Length: 129
Image (cartoon, rainbow, N blue to C red; front, side):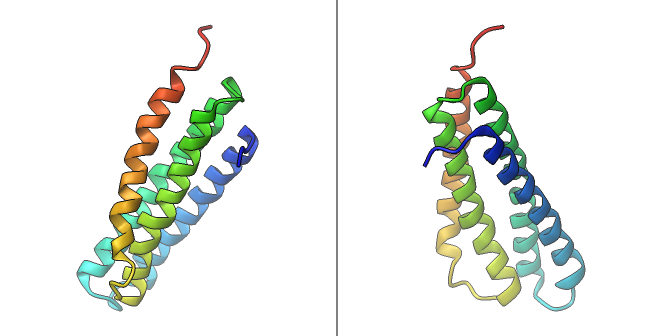
């Protein structure tokens, strides 16, 4: 599904807010309630969530320059699915101490890597000023 740049900006901003919320919850709501390893995993999820929320803002900017960029769309979806799988699985681990979803964590990480490479390729489509 092709989304306009303003939608990607909104998705990035909302994910930034979610990352701050999850980070605060991890710092204040989970301390002394879960193990150290689970808390660390949760914090890693929040950290990578924020990195990729910012990357989604970059996708929005890219699509203002190259609105028809298929690679830009692919990049956005890779980052968004990466957040869901990587950060989401670490959030579940941190909150529930269940390892049921950790199989999805490396898939999310691969989507993050793919997103960064596709962002580099999409950036080549930006016209010179």
